[in-house]
Image 1 (cartoon, rainbow, N blue to C red):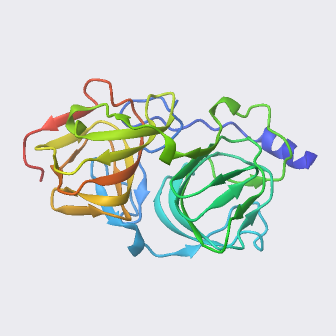
Image 2 (image 1 turned 90 degrees about the horizontal axis):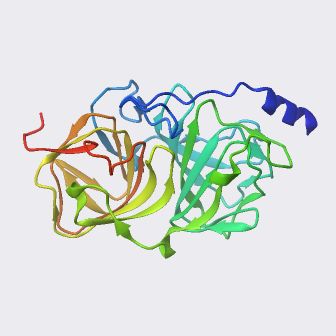
Image 3 (image 1 turned 180 degrees about the horizontal axis):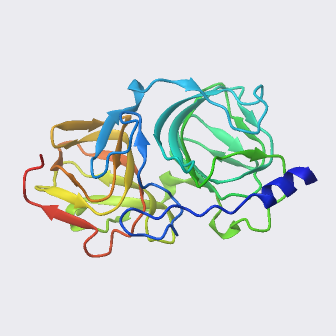
Amino acid sequence: MGENQENLNSQPQLQSIKEDWGGDGRGRMNLSRRRTAISPEYVPRQYQFFDTNTVLESQWQIRGIPENLVLGKKRSLTWHNCGASTSKVLLSPDFHIPPGVFTTDLEIFILGGCIQIGDWKLSKHGYSFIPAGVKFGNWRVVGEEKVEILWMENGPGRLEYQDIDHDLPNARMNEFIPALDSKILPWGRTDTVQFIQSQKKWLRKDSNGGGVWLLAILPHYDGRYAMIQSYNEESYVLSGYCDIGNYHLAKHHFGYCPSFNTVPWHRTDDGGLFFVRIDRDLSKTGTVLSYPHESS
């Protein structure tokens, strides 16, 4: 165990990549310049929407954990050469991770089922943020139902498990979110006039002013115009839909929008609920711009 700690402490402290909108990487989300399930190469300024259930499944394993302890499958949604990635993971009832630490920041959001991490349980729409080097307890699936989660490795570097029985000295304990039940959080206003007919719940705010939230778009929403988005965004549809141009963004669909892309007109009759990650403060002037011209 002491040797593992020495190995982790001796690893170089990698710097997060600078955001392609001009940020300095302080937000540590590493959403810039990602590849996606439908584009093996990064395409700048081009939004990408797709149905996650059409992405091929593969066996899922966390580096550093014996193969017989982790049972799961994944659908890779986005990834970056720096090690950051977002996947949809399906865990079997036999899933187990022993106590330890991860070498990079990890975010998880529960899409279905229930999982226990140490003393805390996370059920549907539960959220957790585990910074690198923060000790966590045993992971196990609660009950006989499989658990489906969004598994977000923020990098930089490849996430690994290490068998260490305490928090590391450089762990950012002040950012640790062990278990958050989004259902009991209050709804608040959005930060942009383009989504005035919407509400959001903050799950986590990073040092850039961006972060993670749930967005509820109310029925009969009509954005009227296309938008220029001066930031990077990932979004997952939890329920309902939103038509974006000619694309019907519905339940289980995913969107990756790199910075300075022009996203077509948004509209919905029935509304929808979305899980969103963004790497910039949207309350700042100029981050979201209405663009009253047809997108090509």
